[in-house]
Image (cartoon, rainbow, N blue to C red):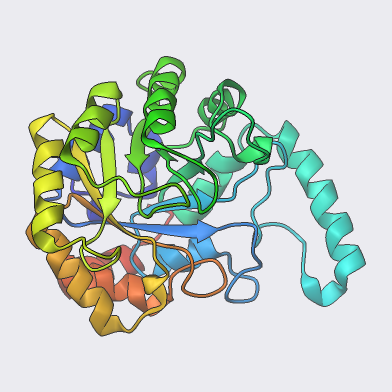
Length: 314
C-alpha cells in the first residue's frame, strides 16, 4: 500500500473512500491538508491557490466558500481583474453558467492539480440566513457525489451558529447520501461564534455518528489547547476507530515558520494522522512557505520534495 505522499494523479483518480482512509493511517501522521478560500483572486497571478498549495507540499486541498449554486474557483478560467471589473464580472457569470452544466468540473480541476480535493459544508441551524450554496443539505451533498469530491469537511466558519448537534446531524445526513463514495471529516477548529468543542465525549460522538475523520484544534492555536489535551482527544478518536486531524484555523497560517514548526511537532507528538493548515495567511491560503515548513517538519525534505516535484501526468 502506498503512503499519501507517494500517490500519483492516476492513483488518486482510482481511490475509493476506504482505500483513502487506510492510506492516511498507513502514512503514520505524515498527511498535509491545505485549505483555500476559492472566492478570492489568487495569491500569484495566473496560478490558482490550489496549484500553489499543491506545489508547496499539500496532499489534500480543501475548498472553502465553494458555492454549489454558483460553482466557480478563481484561478481557473479567463477571469482577470486586469481586464477591469465589468469584464471580470461578465466572464465569471458566463463561466458559472458553464460550470453548473459541467458535471466533471471538479474532476477536471483535480487532474490539473494532481491532489485529493475536498470541500467545506456548513451544517447551519434552521432559520439561518447563510447562503444556500455553502450549506450542508441534501441538494449540495448530492452535488458532492456528482462532482466527485474525494472528501467533505463538516465544520463551521465564524458566526455561522454551527454546534455539536448540527454537526452530528450533518454527519448522519452525509453518510446516508454519500455512502462509501466520499470521506467524511467533521468537527470544529475554533469557536465559530457559538462556543468551542473540546470534549472527548463529543469527539467520540462524532465517530459514532459516522465521521471517518474528526478534526480538533492543533495545540497552540486555540487558547488552552495544549499537547496533552490534544492527545486525549486524539486517543478518544482512535479508540472509536476514527482518524484524527489537527487544524490551524486561527490565522496562524500566516505566522512565522518557527510557529508552524512548533505546532506541527506538538500535533505529531499528540498523535495526529492529518495536519491541516488554514486559508487566512494571505489571499485565501496559508503562506506557501508555511505549507512547506509543515510538510518538512512532519516528514522531512525527501518526502516533501517528492510531493512538490512529482509530475501530475504520472
